[in-house]
Picture 1 (cartoon, rainbow, N blue to C red):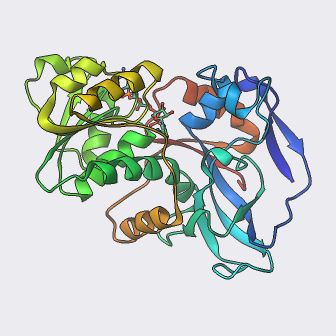
Picture 2: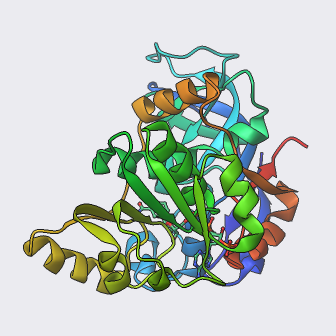
Length: 318
Ligand SMILES: NC(=O)c1ccc[n+]([C@@H]2O[C@H](COP(=O)([O-])OP(=O)(O)OC[C@H]3O[C@@H](n4cnc5c(N)ncnc54)[C@H](OP(=O)(O)O)[C@@H]3O)[C@@H](O)[C@H]2O)c1
């Protein structure tokens, strides 16, 4: 099969197309023919080894698992003999998260992975771009226990995670304020934002509003500014915290503040919940540029710019 290997850490040119054997399923695994995948900020950060400590987990000189890519939509083409939940021919979409392997024509995944039936209303491309943002935002937004009518601020609202967070906060009944650049104001309104703050024109500090929940998705707002805009019992979600923010989160928790951070875990239950929202037309994919597997280095170059609108899709079967 055709796949993409990350041959060392570095710029997008380290990604090379290779021909390797198609995976065989273990007894509890499915082999999925991938129709579409996505280039997410997480893949790009591992490729760049950003932060450096990535190397301590994923491999010192290059990723131990050379095929990046955490999400996919496709067709089950083979099942192991102990598989009972899925059948050959079913169309599914999902995530293997940081286990990776989706920049390829086929992937083998345990049947218990974060996968579910592909929504009929979506193309493979639209389905493939959903799990990264949706699983991340669902994890954090569930923890924040948003109540109807609460004021929620989503910082970085036009990215993959931000656009998912806007839609999920809205689903839980929040009044959503989205922070993004002016060019993306219409986009975030379309997916449910009630108010939009253009971070390039209007400093958040000028705004005197306080929020029940602030979800900082892109690590661009200072910790003190975030706390300043939080109501007394409010919850701060630091979805992309670096080491120093994690430390500050720890100290803030000791003084009674509710600060949520950490690494998300995707699940089949989460994917089922998101599929239900899609089927009920309460959640939609936000798709920016589309590339083919051969163009994956170009897709990474675009994602590295840090200003994609939602998600970047990769057509594996053009
Ligand atoms: N904790 C976890 O387990 C977990 C899981 C998944 C992802 N993450 C992290 O979550 C972060 C966000 O991921 P993502 O995929 O959503 O990123 P992304 O799609 O690459 O984010 C791009 C967005 O960031 C916005 N942005 C850029 N500079 C900004 C600024 N100065 N102020 C406000 N917004 C700005 C851009 O908006 P404009 O173009 O409008 O400027 C753009 O829409 C990443 O760091 C990722 O590593 C963490």
